Each structure stands twice: as C-alpha cells, then as structure tokens.
Amino acid sequence: MSSTPYVIAQAQARQLLEQVDVPQILRKLFRDLAAGQAVQPAQQLVEFPQGAGDFINYLGVLAEDRVYGVKTSPYIVRSEGPLVTAWTLLMSMETGQPLLLCDAGELTTARTAATTAVAVDALAAPHAQRLAIIGSGPVAQAHLRYVKNLRDWQSISLYSPSLTGKSPAELASLRALEPRLQIVASREEALSDADVIMLCTSSAAPVIDPLALSKPALITSISTNAPRAHEVPPHALNEMQVYCDYRQTTPGSAGEMLIASEQHGWDKSAIRGDLPELLSNQTPRPAYDRHVFFRSIGLGLEDIALANALYHLQRKS
Image 1 (tube, rainbow, N blue to C red):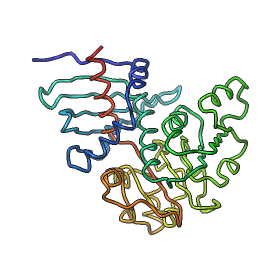
Image 2 (cartoon, rainbow, N blue to C red; image 1 turned 180 degrees about the vertical axis):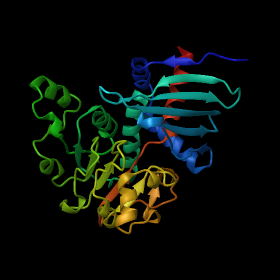
Image 3 (cartoon, rainbow, N blue to C red; image 1 turned 120 degrees about the vertical axis):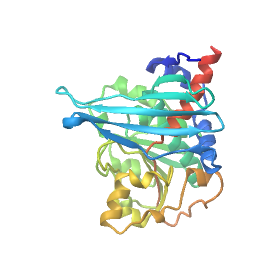
Image 4 (cartoon, rainbow, N blue to C red; image 1 turned 135 degrees about the vertical axis):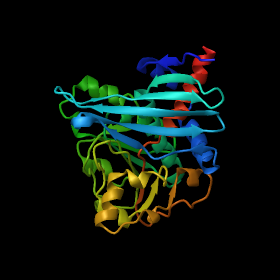
C-alpha cells in the first residue's frame, strides 16, 4: 500500500530537533558504520545543462533502523544570485514507501555542529581549557551549543570579521548564548594559547595558519561547498595528525586534502582515524606533540539519522 510521507518545513524541523540528543544520535550512527550496519556512499554531483547549476545527492542506509534515504541539495544559478536549498527524503526498507520529506536546512546545521562536537569529545586533550571559535553565524553558534559542556573550559573566545559594525543588541544576543563567551577583536587574540580551535566559516581560503600557533592544538574544520574550499593551508597537513569524519569519502571531497595530495606529497593513508574507528576504539587517540586536525565534509547518513529521529517524534505527536 502506498503512504503519504510526513512533510516537515524548516521551522518545525528546528522545533523537533530541540527535543532530540543530536550528538548521541550521531555517535550511534558512527558505531553502526564501524559495525557494518550502515552504508555511506560517496557524494553524487550532477550538473545541470548550460551551466544552470547542479545538485548534490547525499545517500545512506541505516540497516538496524530499517531506513534509507537521500538528501538532495540543488545549486540553482539565477540572475539575482544563486539559490541553494536542501531536502531529505526518508524511505522504509520494509515497505519501500516514503516516510518523511524534511527541509534539510536545520538538519544540516545541527549535524555539522554535532559531528564536530563528537570529534572534540573524542580527540581533545582531557584537560583542555581554552576554546577558540572562528565564525559567528548559525553554524558557529550551534558548535558552541554542542561543545560548551564537553570540557571544563576556562575561556571561550570567538572572533569573526563579520561582527564589525554589529549593534550592541546583536552582540549582546551572541554573548547570551554562554556566560563564558568572550567576543575578541582579532583572530590572534582568539587563537592565543588555545587548546581547541573550531573553524566555523564559509571561507573558501585558509583562515588560520596552524604552523603559527604557539602550542599544539586540536583544529576542527567544516569549510563550505565552494570548489576545493579549505580553512587551513593544504601544505600544513604534512605537519599535523589528521582525522576525519569518514575516511572512505572525506579525502575525495575535502579541498585541502585534494590540494595537499596533488601539490604537497600528502597521501590519504596518513589519516590516523575517522569517527567510526574512534568511537569503536579501533584507532588510538592523538598525542599532542603536534597539531591535531579534524576535517568533516558532512555525510548523508547524518541527515538521514536525524530525519529518522524526527520521523519517530512526529509519529508520536
């Protein structure tokens, strides 16, 4: 029998996400990947004819939950500027019927930040005390929300050039997210003596130079969907201990990894571990004799796992 899927718009998705433990959902997902209970293919890029844009499909299977799905995100070229949207379709592996169609904007923000939080929890030194955040948008704010209780942070510094000229009310709203948060005037001030540095920008070019930091730190990066975007210089990978969200897919998409491989003699075999390996104790935690770099590109499975959680919440309502 056919069924009509639930349709969840952005505002409702935001409301439902507040009711679920996003990092814990992702921890289970990565453990399922390690156990062979999940499938994560590479991203699929399809270009529109005549340079009209493209779309990327992010696929995944959660066998234990008996669902699969696809997040599809178009980039539509328009005279007034490009349009980017994203929707996630959740399907039943038992009936073959659609279960949920969800605006993926809120899912993307939540899973991006929560994936970084899972990595910080697994990789940061146990006694890390100084947290730095580069960026101030919704994704940066979500990063702060998910990591603020992972360590006994003695200082949390945030720098973003986009805050220049913001009103006192806007800055006060940002500070209200966390009492320990300090908005600083320069990148250098934010990075000073930092133990963990979260890069939460949409920059397509490096925003920090790890080799200029005063001591070894954990650096996390998400970057953006611009071609070969990267938040750290590609050559720096050779000097760092590199981890990623999923070693089967990340090196083929992450800009700094592609450039480092082509121009700087870096090889993906240098990746020390990914989140499935870290969460199943298949790879050692890093030693902080040099910088640790964690790169995530975003997995379709992350969106699908969150869509599945929202589906079950919606069924109960």
